[in-house]
Amino acid sequence: MISNSKRVKTLELWAAKMRRNVVDICMQRGGYAGQGVALSDVGACIYFDEMRPDGEGWYHDRFINSNGHDTIINFAAMAEMGIYTMEELRTMGADGSPIDQSPIEGARGFEITSGSLGTGVSQAAGIALGERKKGSDKRVICLLSDGELHEGSVWEAFMFAAHYKLSNFVVIIDNNDLGATGKTSDVMAVEPVKEKMEAFGFAARQINGNSIPEVLEAFEEARSIKDKPYCMIAETKIFAGIDVYQDAIPFAHFVGANGRWETGFLEWEPGWNEIQERIKRLESELEAMD
Image 1 (cartoon, helix red, strand yellow):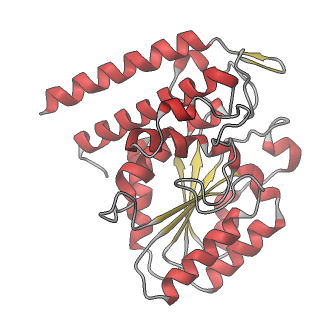
Image 2 (cartoon, helix red, strand yellow; image 1 turned 135 degrees about the horizontal axis):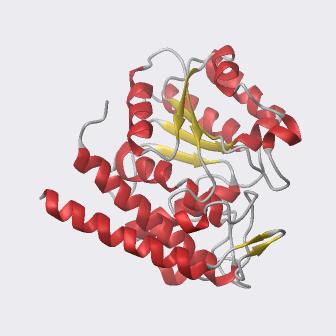
């Protein structure tokens, strides 16, 4: 079990700051707020704990985010790292802005063009094989959505990774059972995901993706697996981490700056105030641990 409470509390603070940044960005012209808020725990663990720094301001390990809808967590984390400023990120989606909601290859911090669902896993698996052939100890982490499991190319990539025993490859599936048009399970059921991943040759673990200790434990387990790739099935809840947003928006998709998306309605100010208060509380709790 992960017992270092200061480590966990520090990551909770990073996740809270990422959630604040997501809300800040989306208040301008809208965006994928639900996914960004929900995935901040996973994102904080990736950026501020799991990936090893390269000593030159970036990372030794590699993170591929396949789902363009989720890349707002990359931006939210990189704002804390100084790779982007919040002034830049507040222009996301504006005419002439260099900040794309689904970033393209070569954008700061992004190795692939995100958003063509189902393609990121193949690229990440290829990168993992390439690193192994070079004799590198770099690990490759790939985040994708459960909706991407509807794509056949994803399963081809899984077979590829298992065949080549890519133990340096970690797949994280955001398993929230939500998509642009409703429940993933209603569009085309993907469960049981864990059993399917194991059948395809992965070591797999199902976790609460909004529990930082569970995410850390899964990464710890992944590092111990030496003969196969690893899959973390992260059960997340849309807008998890900001209580007043729970159930405000029924689907995992774009929320406009006015807070409306189909039958949902979101008021930005209450959530903004809540996450600011959470940051202050976490900072006080961490200060008391020193």
